[in-house]
Amino acid sequence: MKLYSYFRSSAAYRVRIALNLKGLDYEYAPVHLLRDGGQQLKPEYRELNADGIVPTLVDGDDVLTQSLAIIEYLEETHPEPALLPRDPIDRAFVRSVALQVACEIHPVDNLRVLKYLKHELKVADDVKDAWYRHWIDSGFAALEKRLARDKRVGSLTFGDTPTIADLCIVPQVFNAQRFNIDLTPYPTIARIAEAANQLDAFAKAAPAQQPDAE
Amino acid sequence: MKLYSYFRSSAAYRVRIALNLKGLDYEYAPVHLLRDGGQQLKPEYRELNADGIVPTLVDGDDVLTQSLAIIEYLEETHPEPALLPRDPIDRAFVRSVALQVACEIHPVDNLRVLKYLKHELKVADDVKDAWYRHWIDSGFAALEKRLARDKRVGSLTFGDTPTIADLCIVPQVFNAQRFNIDLTPYPTIARIAEAANQLDAFAKAAPAQQPDAE
Image 1 (cartoon, helix red, strand yellow):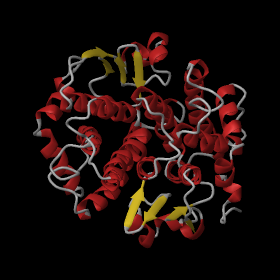
Image 2 (cartoon, rainbow over the protein chains, first blue to last red):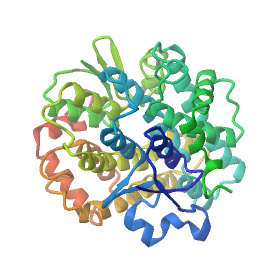
Image 3 (spheres, rainbow over the protein chains, first blue to last red):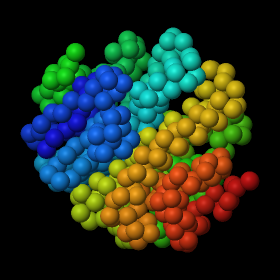
Image 4 (spheres, rainbow over the protein chains, first blue to last red):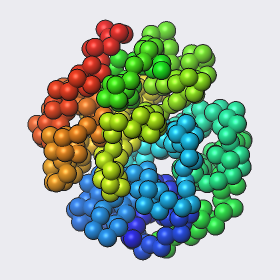
């Protein structure tokens, strides 16, 4: 398998963790999101990924896009260790936590949205930074409220076993820390990310450990 | 089952289609997103849905959030008719189309993002409208490119059988049409939405057919 990735991409980071947890070897193909006007926007790459985003996973002749679709595919084709619980209601809980990050926080802070704010709306850097923080803070506040009171939460989102929820939380916490967002109001989220990062599969997937890290 | 919904919410619309396709009866609980400063933001509703968004599905004692997690739950608990193909690679294709809409287009045009643009960034209405159109146009352009050349596409996204991809495309096309976005550059998307809307389950889920329609 070959993973088109950028070391700091939150969506690629999720897939790297999944591949590591499943013990799957892969070739790392770096796509630099800021160099050459964005290598992800080049026609060659867009043949693989029409949206011009990372990650893309190539498995034999198959080209897979969208991190959560890729992770569900890995789960179905390499069921062990499972990244989703067995019971449908618990699976829905775990998926909804993953989607809270992947749909409510991450897309609004995506690189191309930030670019549109800067180049089309001509907002100042401090306004753009406030935007970035706002969606993390409002999203984390909602997520913290859920996690703090759900009895299924253990050292990780679902007991002590890594699930797709943790795969989404850890990269989002990385982004928050990179922007110096105070995590004190989100103790459960911070604690889950810290516990997950103790695991090899998460540690090896970290941006600083990637071949294209700067 | 009880569905907290708003007639025009794209995410609630997805779940209504899924419930109809599965032939599941449900009670409709309207949450008016614009009335009373947003009924979705009231503390009572936020007890069910911390993000303060629709939909929420209550099934017995269980409270489910995030439209795609709800739909996967319905798929697992009521497998027939299936809303996902059988083969993992085809499932990944269908899920990735759904996520292209649910992660790349919809969140950036969500009500609370538009509110932030208006109230925090103080942008003019025409700039806000251009923003709305931009994310639909750029997202549909990428999606059209994929769908136009994928041999699995039939009258619907995956052959002629409704899948979770169609459940996401139809509400997004509804939004686009509401904002008079020209769909001529996206003939495959427009054709899929038109074919899906011929089906009872889609037609009955349309905003105009809901009890809270205005």
